[in-house]
Length: 251
Ligand code: PEP
Image (cartoon, rainbow, N blue to C red; front, side):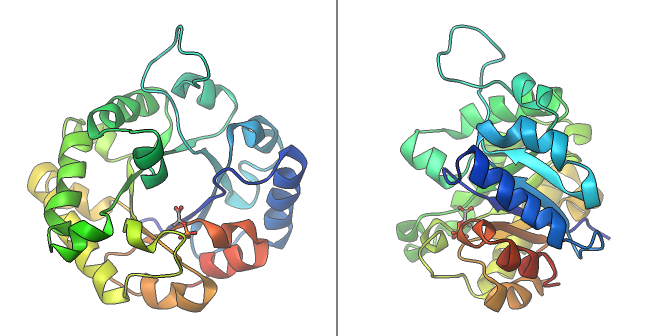
């Protein structure tokens, strides 16, 4: 059976104190027998504190929301994959649509970030997804498959086996609009077939593909019911411990 994962993406929310408080609340309210692996995707400032106080307890993991496409050097303001790993966390979210849109991240840069993340033993949660105009032109399958091809298809089978994918239709992120469970399932199945064509069916069948985009306690169960939907990447609702845990237990 494929691993189920629900990852929160706090984005640029929560100062140091507020973030620790929220993570503690998730830890206290979690039973340790959740239906999915919990990952908290936090700003860099929280990583080390949460690695010490949260990571591994009741199975909870923590993710950075980005890392550099360079290994080290004169890149002011950047944080390398090696630095992320040195905080004690084990995951990194890469290629979120907000990073693609506001920071011009390309599929090629993301390929380099994936390599560095994997070389530093971080589990990458690789985000992909189409904007509204692409869906309206009915080019969404080709668009998202190209994101996977250009960023992932150079990976070895061994590295691909460690990678998690998050499909996030951009028109559903933070908008209150959700893809229907049928739309999510269709895209996830299409992506899995695309992965199978390149990496083989067996590896494609073990790759968790998460859905992201206005996922909430009220719609998570329906979305997660799709056979190829292995969990979620959760923005707004991950800022509330009760809502987040309700989503984690929506399978
Ligand atoms: C996200 O940013 O990854 C996301 C899915 O946001 P939201 O749940 O708020 O739509």
